Amino acid sequence: MPFGPVVFGVLLAASVAIGVVALWRLSDTRDPVDMRLQEYGVSTEAALPSDASATAASRRQWTGVTRLLYGFGFGPGLAAALTRAGLRLTAAEFALITASAGVLGFAIGAVRVGGLVAGIAGAILGLAVPIVYLRFKEGSRRRKFTEQLPDVLTLMVGGLRAGYGLPQTLEMMVARLPPPASEEFGWAVRAGTLGMPASRALNEMADRAGSGDLDLIVTAINVQAELGGNLAQTLETIGATVRERLRIFREIRAMTAQQRLTGYILALTPLGLGIFMFITRPEYIKQMFVGMWLVLPIGAVILQVIGFVVIQKIVAIEV
Image 1 (spheres, rainbow, N blue to C red):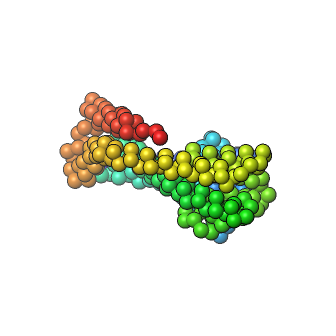
Image 2 (cartoon, helix red, strand yellow):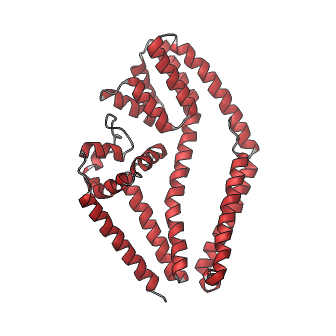
């Protein structure tokens, strides 16, 4: 069994750890409160999630990784993506999980199949799994939030017509709506409690949710706050538009279900078969990763990705 790639992987991981510690020591000191807030994808004026304060002390050990991510510019985007996905992880924690998956994939590929190329392929696959999961959770949470918008508008219109102000209406929605709508509006309410203007809190909520319909709702609220008008009637009109758009969207999803499923099957079948061969017959499949034959798996992966992207673009009909 060739242990050279495994030793190389261990040395590479140790080098990365030493580099992280060195950059941490050389980095500038930042406000710890600001860093804790930014790790969760919120600005310094917004509030942390309700369960974040209990675990803040235990997560300070990843401060060096956080500084490294923010130093290279990856921290804000990753923290925002984790927030949109609803994952109670900081950017540093997710980066460590991704790195661990990559090291594990490298070790499995190098030990089970043998060779540096197989180890690199396993590392790439291991690194891709957490990222794909993050994108999946982000898209799933966005779709679920969009589907809740008709209920959001119904409660908001009812609260405003009952005589509630906007802050009281938002608090009522947080208490009565299920996640993720209650979580998103809860962040806006807590930000307002800390002194952030309501318009800014709602704008940040809309940016975090990534929903065009929510942008329309927030714009209507901000315009009403500046110019006045019947907000309940405006939101009721927007609610009718949102419901009709969701109806058309569901019809399109049903019509394109077969094509979307075909794309997933065509993309995952070769990958699953390759993993199965790696596990059961490594001596057979590793011949494709030697010499000029390496062009075959690389070309196959590139063509599979291109085909999957083309299929998804064809069936992604905007409403």
